[in-house]
Amino acid sequence: MVPHTLIPNLLTIAGTDPTGGAGIQADLKTFSALGAYGMSVITAVVAQNTRGVRAVTPMTPDCVAAQIDAVFDDVRVDAVKIGMLHNEGIIAAVASRLRHYRPAYIVLDPVMMAKSGDHLLDPNAISALKTQLLPAVTLVTPNLPEAAALLGALEAQSDDDIRAQLHEFSKLGARATLLKGGHSHDPAVSTDWLSDMARAEDEPIAFTSPRIVTQCDHGTGCTLSAAIAALLPHHDLIRAIRCAKTYLDGALSAAKALSVGQGHGPLHH
Ligand code: PLP
Image 1 (tube, rainbow, N blue to C red):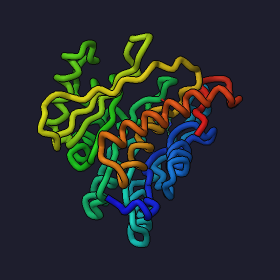
Image 2 (cartoon, rainbow, N blue to C red):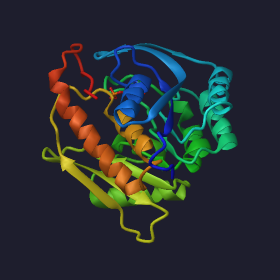
Image 3 (cartoon, rainbow, N blue to C red):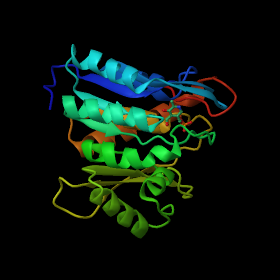
């Protein structure tokens, strides 16, 4: 852990959102709001707004690797958040550079699709994400559809399905998995489940919060994973997740004060 007197340096490796709601822009806002110093490596420039994705221009794997090298050659990096990686070449570049630099904390948000239904990850790259990156990270944060895609399974419907999928993630080498239940059909609450190989108990931990119904939910996954990464240098994993969820609930509730776009609006950080 980093001493509490030191401001943590946080790096996000992700895609962009010019309307500021998701991706790199959401991550940097989250880092600042939680008192960290934010840095960013861009994997893809995404022409998108609150209504959908218009075009994706990926950086070359060499360009992504060069950005990572530029940061680590100069700056102490206390934690890394990984978001949109887009394709297999970028996944390989990120995995190789992070294996080299070995930052203390890595949170992987396995971004696959935007709420608008647009693909942010080439479906052929899912297996690379699973084999090259998953075993190298501190925490992976799939939602229910992403977990199903990574495991080649149906979406979990019950608590037993969730336990079984968490077990599958640990067999794939994930040190800890936070399976996010926000896509479930429970109208009252939203529950996320954590399994952590470092804990002695087998039983996953449930984090339950009241469901906040809002049209302004663009970038919720990005924000949660960025918040956990920002908090990990100063807190243990369970406390980091708890505080990150409180932060996300606040940003979702505060979003009603914004008037940004006509689709899924952003959160207010
Ligand atoms: N755009 C980028 C660049 C992202 O990284 C993400 C993250 O998941 C999204 C869009 C998706 O945002 P949402 O599904 O919340 O609309």
